[in-house]
Length: 448
Image (cartoon, rainbow, N blue to C red):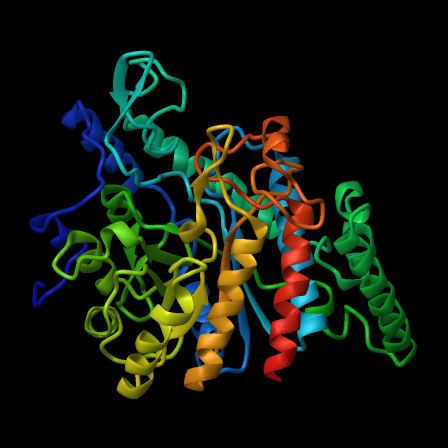
């Protein structure tokens, strides 16, 4: 690892899972244009998130990080609103039923790139580059569609900017008002068992708000009743893009990656001597790092030292993705090592990526029971080691998809073909997401 850091010092190291851009001149022009654009987020917002995550690291709050597996440039305003609504529904359930302050971060407004296990894909005897997310190429299977196109980096920036504008309008303009809790029940949620529990909870909140209003406590006197803090995040995979949006804060002189409030490093790119760790160690955003079942205590401690040498609470979130059958055995040694080292990390559970498999009908899926089993194991491991289970990190959508099996509707293999719409990995739908929130809230109450 370099002793000094600059926004481009990562270029001297191996950068895995980067596209092979066919026209370097076209790429450099696109990056120059990106570098001239305004920041998408601001340094002060990133500092606010670090402070909130610091409370999670200290066991005083819980993290909900959720959103799409791979965002689409074609997502409508309604689809973005519905994704936000499901996250807000989950947040209400976790806060009200779990009795814990919540930090809300979306996998949104930037999750346009994906690492893939193979650089190419073969269909009908034809081999083409894999789909790497819409910031690189298109999901269609033709040579032209799979060609990495630098202009898509500019499209990703513009799409992120418009999504952020919409999110800020919703979260600050009254849509997130607690008085709207009852109206957030979409029909496909309201008709499910989890939706029935949500309706009962919403009625209780309405009665509490009526009482508070009678006492003079309203959204005008308490802004937290009227609006919410909502932050954005994505995997910092495309380092050219991230570098182009990195800015030096005029107040502190520190560098921030202004493409999102929080960035994370994936399981495939967390090499200590790699370009992704080198780039992200130098920006002052709160960071995440995925930790899979092969990670050793020494590796995790080295990542903590590389990414948070000053031991700032809230700076680093370790996002565990071990798998439902491995978490109870594999996680405790990592928890113990980090606890004993004194590193103030946030521990979050990604119960999705370690539980993906191919269904009988030949598509990738996950079973709700496996997702819940990994979260339960995550909580159990923390109880064993006396540490705080800080949050969950899930892939979901507000659309009524049929991509993950099980849940309150007991989806089976034959249901997958009805609405399998993801561009990459299977996501929980609205019903399953709200159901999961109630299950996690029960685990949180048990820790109280």
